[in-house]
Image (cartoon, rainbow, N blue to C red; front, side, top):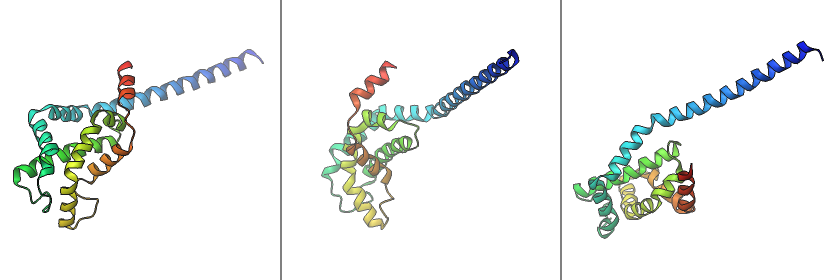
Length: 170
């Protein structure tokens, strides 16, 4: 091989390397930008989660709602209880949607909120089922994403110690 052929081969190798590295950097930049666009809504959800009203509503749904009759579904509850049911139910459903869209890592949501999802769905389940029946709507309505996600979390393994330890070491 002569010198010009070696130079040409070297130039092609350098060009291909630059293309691969540029593509990799662009992909990482796109991912970071995509997740960065969702940071504000996620922070807003966390702010809501920390509020005293949210924690009181959550405790009411978990502790007191199961003692109320579910014969008339959600719409048969008084207005204040309905507000609490929808505030808490749709809050957790929104987290599930974020996980399904890949904005939040489903394993991370499992590690942090699994117990709460299972408690909330257990409390809401009879009311939601009765509400669907009364409205004559299929299972794909009224907190169906929450139901599906809670069932997935219940079936999934608990990864909390390993997942959180791995995240903290990065």
